[in-house]
Length: 376
Image (cartoon, rainbow, N blue to C red; front, side, top):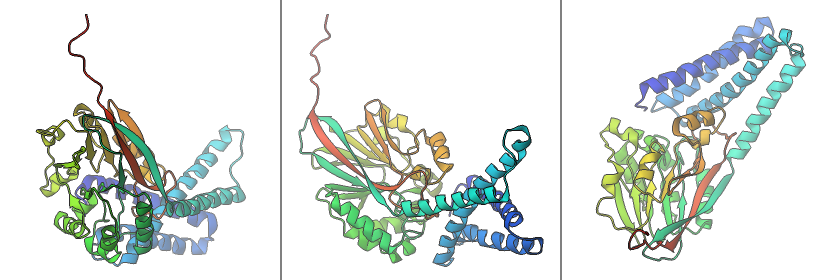
């Protein structure tokens, strides 16, 4: 399912260590000696649902959801136990005594409350609205673009969530609908069973519906993902530029991970050759080389992939890797929007960001007139 074996090995190694660490601490803290090994074994068995759900292509659908819940608890309880153990180790050198059982219970209950709040917060689908002025020689009425990145249908995102997402997008009255990748969660049949095709087909946009393939769409099979999107009325842009209503150039880029699946990625400059001087909007699933968009004079780039980290500390990892975890940034004349996504990956919660769709209003303004000659 994943091409980067080294990265996944690192992730799973960290997960296994956190699973064992949290299991040991949980068993020691709450259970008597005669039940210690039973509780520890049950914790490890539960935690094993994550790798089984991720790597077994034909696993039952509930196994992946159980694995996501296990990952949620392992991460947050490990952080809580790290805090408690650090408190205990530093207490002889500090002003505070070692935590009592009651204080440890309070810390762990706070971690559980944090998880509960994250689960509730993840069900909210917000709208990130912003406006971009595009200098253009062709004046055009404002264009409303709605982008829904990282839906991940077929994982823990099911039919009811997709219906709410469809209604949220429709309320924005888009002129253009964009899907910046990871529409599926790596399994096209499951995404279809969750109602993804009907949901996407119900979306209306007078200037067109466009998508690019994300890494999970490629893992699911590029051809199958492309067919699902085409069936729902979307045009899949694969290193392709299109003029939209004579007003702007829309560029859809292949994901960098595609090279591992015989899907090359062309330089952005080559995709813009021969294009008119219309404003340029780029849809690129991964915000991996923002300098390239800036150098090519792109007006707006919309990306996803990061999920905004979804939970701590992954937001810090995304910030370190891409320079931005989520939100808006400006690179020269280029406005970059990195969306934390409309759906969820594996874990049924968000604690450092919210699910969202992007509503961008493009306002076309006259280009500044260039002087005929340099002033004296």
